[in-house]
Length: 138
Image (cartoon, rainbow, N blue to C red; front, side):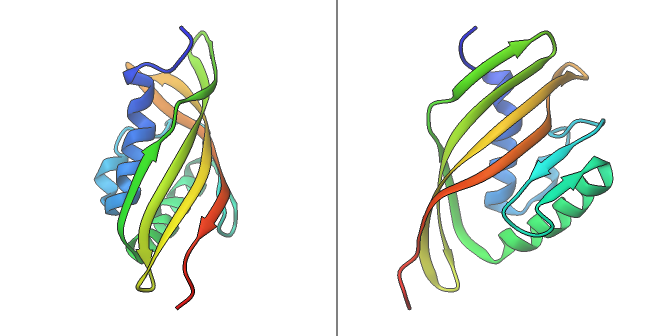
């Protein structure tokens, strides 16, 4: 296998849909029930363990509720690696939306580590990196 299959893409896709909708039900079964680590571009930037995941969920829900018409598009997965029950890949991601009444475009990348758990792939870790951000001045 040289790229993630549909089962491996299910959790990243559900995560992106949560960001678009702020519907926390979309996160059911997305993250591992074990140790989780999230690197984000908002404080405290590093979220670890199930407690960190709960805090991330709270802060991210607040964050995305301030954005209207948020939509994503994934680019081709990069840097794929599969070892037993662990998979890693990076997803170039384009976001468009409206914040503070102004449209924006953001290009970034998510690097994911997922584990096979309960018959599916669950996010064990992700890191988000912004490559470019454009928002016209008011």
